[in-house]
Image (cartoon, rainbow, N blue to C red; front, side):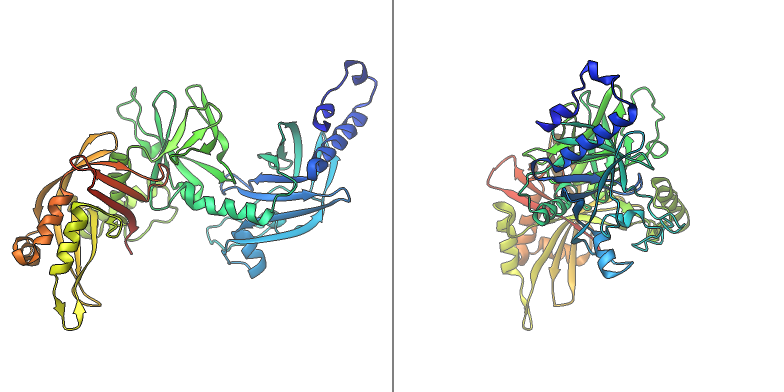
Length: 482
């Protein structure tokens, strides 16, 4: 096999050849590795530490040509003009060479509009955040020092900016467009913008909080420190960029903590990500009751977003607004809504009952528009179940009931009714026999549940199964307020 002979240097030959000759031979060997077995490769490309990584598929030819294809917003910007953010597929042919410069260097030696976009001197997406507007662009590399080859993987490093990257051999018959479409589809499967926090759990049980995973420019902080009761996560945050590939997720740079070093993760059947560096560390949404359902309700923001977007700026803005205009401190950003078509048992029966009891108003049949689980933050700070009754095409009557969440075990919760908001409409619907479905619905909700989900990393749907009756399943989907 070519790869084996490339790196087996016989002791007797080492000093019989000049350094220049050995470099040329190494470059030739790496070039042959690129061409071997069909010459198709995936590159996990990072322009810099402040941007997510993108996957490119490359096919190398022995005539010096290379087909480079990608599927990302920068393809759309190239094809449709600066400012376009359409995630688009594109392929372009250019030239490549394996040269020497203190080591073998893979050079994409002629301009490829879809790959060299990161080396342009402008901000092609017109983000307006100052990045790329200083004549240096995103400072992406297009020449790569080849470090080693092992197991059908080439370890390379940007020649100018020293960012390490991986190139992995793909089967010769790989359909690049289908392959890259899978990568793009994985962006929404791995992380969801509706789930604001997930957790990296180390073998010793310690956890890091990962925020904004869906943007792949993640804010991280250690959840707590046993040896420091005054530990403040807000002043200990840091960022990591990452990449989602065809079969895996990875950070550009590894995370090191108490002897653990994690960087590469693969999805498991339950949706969690397992670290392949130690085969133990995981990334998941954590406990579905405490870490996901309730925590998601707590994610709020000031009405006027601070510039910069850092956790420190966000918290400072919240505190400032609270001090000046408490009623405008935050807006609700997410809530959980009962999926009426998928829920079964007592919840479904109560919904059907209430829908059958709601009268017509003229030609309009009133219905239960939605049932939401919401948290009203400062200044009220209360958990609510809101039953929205559609009383016309454009009007809704909201019935509000307060509850207390009690965490009864792993992925388990009990809802305890406190009271309604006291409004006349709420009391009328709750106390009237004509609308008995309202009371039966609240009774069906206010019980103990075990929670499960199709994806433990992006649990945008969760199934609440009654601990008293397995046939009572309340299905909730996370939603975003306008």
